Image 1 (cartoon, rainbow, N blue to C red):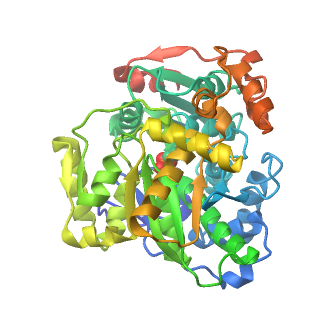
Image 2 (tube, helix red, strand yellow):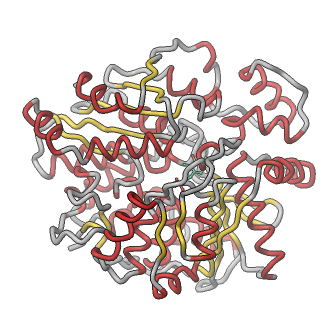
Length: 491
Ligand SMILES: *Cc1c(COP(=O)(O)O)cnc(C)c1O
């Protein structure tokens, strides 16, 4: 039976459903599988299968406390017509890479891949564990998670959802998506701080035992829709398996060939899901971790020193404007051979000294990873040249990934077939993209979407159409110090 335990050493083991409900461990660690499940069948047996079929196999292998019927219910409810592409996650060749388009869900970013299924995984878990408390989902967002979580949990029985986003730290479209959210159980606040402040604030609320007691007395339990929740991470493993199977099906690679995976990285969740896919048996050569100017991960992969004593930049790839990448803790735990004490030490150092340095053996394990970054000017140039040369439209985050990949190829000469996680629709970052491909100037962002669509022949994702005509329902702006009391007052 697959068990989950905390990265910080607590002995307690949980079933998958319990870990999903808890969100974050009591010792502040993150839940990780005690052992990685292997794919329960040969990769060749997955060829010809749909996204849903592959997702059932992959997610079911991690959460083997779910019955096949329960897993089928979750997967089929999540990956339905909500996705505008019938393949769910099309793999598109452009330039020197294969783009795994993860943004065809309702909110036009890859967060939909996990957040369309998380509510089903959670409600099924509650039933399985006979948990009768109301669940309140707390979410810190750098722009995309918030909307995807709101869509996933809106009007789901027995849940409330509260989202905190950095005021002026998200794109115009991202903000409008969130503040127009419908649903009686949805709550959205801008905070006077950046994403790290929002995430740290949410973690603090989770770790406030007294608050948890007071909420329990009211029949409420907190959980998380951030990638600190293992229920967020595991569904993402499925699309890496899927992309490998598609490359085999197309004849681009032979079964057993290794591929490279490039991921525009913020909180390290998406790339970690790729690493989990490798642990399940998918052949991967390198994980290329792409950052923007907030390149703390690039430096870490190159030196083994994680140092957040640096300036924080607001960039045109805002969903990656992060200095504290939560899920790195999980990777370090695995690379340490499951040494919870060591990880606890590193994380405590990060809190108190804002810097830590990993052991030689962890550093060696980082050899699977290549780190690189692209600044805003290079990102814009890459969007422009890709569009001019191949007619392919990338958003700013995906462009960071592609630029770092081009640098990697140049530096290493490695020609391995490469999958790039394409994490958002270009329309979510319309101002930057329009500028990069030389679309006429237009001050009204929503008018710009239409112009961009006309010029490129790419349709505006359904979820972004007529966004400007929707009623604004959430206007709260609060200080970071008010996050906890805001939650308690709401509940
Ligand atoms: C969230 C996000 C990222 C970063 O993903 P992580 O899992 O946090 O590393 C990259 N691009 C986009 C568009 C995102 O929304």
